[in-house]
Image (cartoon, rainbow, N blue to C red; front, side, top):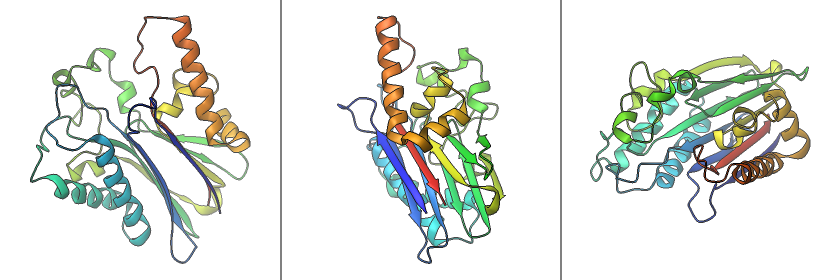
Length: 262
């Protein structure tokens, strides 16, 4: 098995809110990957004593452990149990009903000798490469389908679409959100490699249109995950120089990429 992982903060002066891991089963016949993109909270508070990196690390660690140690559990149940475990860890001190309580997007994939299972929740991406080199993007596109007027920085307006029917879903404090994830199972023989990435790395395709998902996968395979992130950073700097004073979301976002040949 070959794997490569990179996770870099968008701002060196701020903690990285992403989480990325690769876990291997004790038998060596299977494993899992986890990629989370922690949701940056509003400045006016979010009902929790804990920073987003705390939440991402707790949830990511639980997903890594459960996906490997509980191979008989469906990935939706793995996510549900992981969310419940983290919620129980701070329910006594924090308001978990707040719409911006710490939360994250999720990519979770697990492989065995016979199959590859996947789960995607919100706007992180899982790319699957076939033995013939064809790349399929497995996406939860509910966020991208919402009208831009619904996606504002104000936390109250955001609460009308976040983890709400007709909106989009993230892993926060409600274990039932696991049933909202995009899931599936592929024959192991149909999967040569996987690449999972947060939207900070996916900007190369989605924001800067430097290539498509197949070209991104080829870049990661040939030059490595760190090369993709560095290319994104160069594009971000170029955009800021070309359009000074024009804000288009975060100028730099946390970026994580995991490449695995199971």
